[in-house]
Image (cartoon, rainbow, N blue to C red; front, side):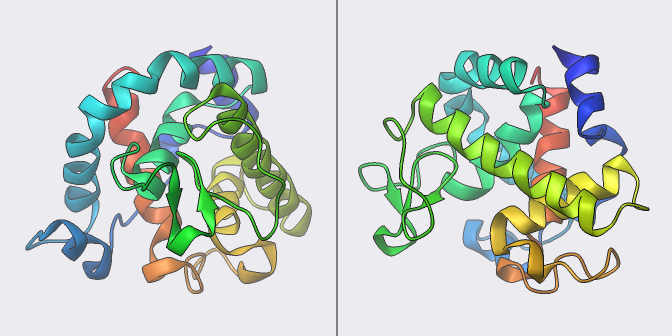
Length: 189
């Protein structure tokens, strides 16, 4: 799974990142931001993430994407399920570990199921590919990061690589997810 799957959509370990913004970090009452803050939040989520590791690996292998990327999104979106109310977040608009928006998608599976993870990861892959079409000169790693930003706010929100997170939640979505994913990669995902 690892190296072959990660190559399809870039290598998460080679994606540059500034990590979490102050706004994101203060959600955990952290007195610092950046990669260190993203890593701390991922570390907090790790014991809960381990409940989904087998399903993450299944989806990652089936769809040819790095499981650490899926884990990074789960950490950011739902804090490995701990931030959800009966599977729901975003004021009842988003569902599941990876927070699929009910206003844009017909929901699939239970909130913590392989079906949900598959649906959400397919949305991510669509976004990465759309960013690749929009920015064909970007490297696979840049397209991955742009796809993460698009997963949060749509392809039209990504205008340039230097400002990839300009329109994302807290202005850091892709940078935070990348840093969290890199942490999970180091911890067996």
